[in-house]
Amino acid sequence: MVRYVKQRNNFSCGPIAILNALKWSKLGRFSYKNDFNWLRIQSGCSKIGTPHENLSPLINRLFPKENKFLVRELHCPIFTEIDSFFRENSKGNKSIILSVAISSEEHPDGYVGHVFLISGKYNGNYFISHNNSKNSIVLIPKNDLKKVLLNRGEKYQNYYPHDFASDKNGARY
View 1 (cartoon, one colour):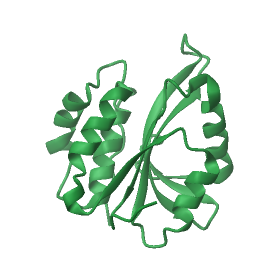
View 2 (cartoon, helix red, strand yellow; view 1 turned 135 degrees about the vertical axis):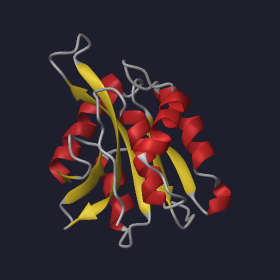
View 3 (tube, rainbow, N blue to C red; view 1 turned 90 degrees about the vertical axis):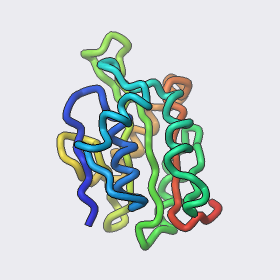
View 4 (cartoon, helix red, strand yellow; view 1 turned 180 degrees about the horizontal axis):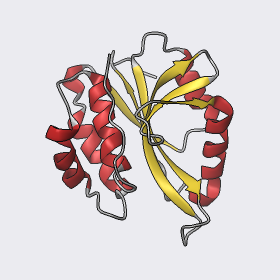
């Protein structure tokens, strides 16, 4: 069983999501102790967060095609696309690194960005997420995920357009 990592501060969701994706991939032995600082530096993560434009080149470097991974960048997928992607996944071979805007009255812009990993579905009504709260694994009800994706909508899609779908079998989708 994969031991996912939880986020330990309020700004490192990008490198933690990538670290959890690496752990999910089983391409090697990855840990917070050994790999987090390198991922933080490579992703440009600072106390204000991770620049989204840094995610794509880093993810493409870490999941090479010769390892039979297919990583595809998505632009603001809607809920039905994500649900369909996982509906076909009964063996845990697919994951998505999702980047969203979450409403926040405390933030001057009215929202905060967050990046997390979804590694599958549970009982058809929940998505298995990692780094989505103070725990390393959280079940997100599908209606909650729908709301988060709708909030991303037109207002935030230029800020949070980068999502990454991966398939361990290298299958086209």
